[in-house]
Image (cartoon, rainbow, N blue to C red; front, side):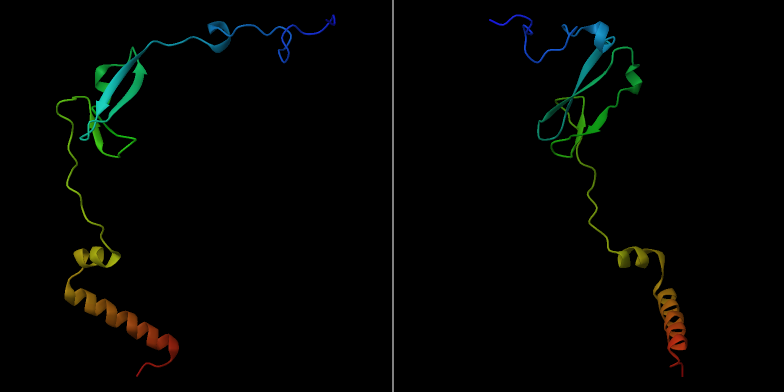
Amino acid sequence: MASGGSAIRGSRVGAGPMGEQDRGYHADRIAVSYWDELGNETVRYFAANLPDEEIPDIIDSPSTGLPAGRDKDNPPSVAKLEPYKTHLAYVKERRSESEAEQLLEEALTQLRERRGTAG
């Protein structure tokens, strides 16, 4: 056996076991469980000294995207799902039929003037 070699290959001089003095103080924490409609549990950790009113009652489940609550027997249900609306649907909510015709006519007049085809 050769002398002068490291007893543990790949270790650094002065390396020792990592402890709190190297990693910092480990804060006390509490685990809070959340359940979604499908029965999936998600655990979130919060500081132990955090007031209860600052811990959220509902989160989004990372696995399903559904809302998840702290009551296992009564999980929150999905709020009413609104279908995807097109841009035109939003415009129709804001404008009446007569306003739409007037805006269209103004836009066509401007276009015809730019093209030099206004008559």
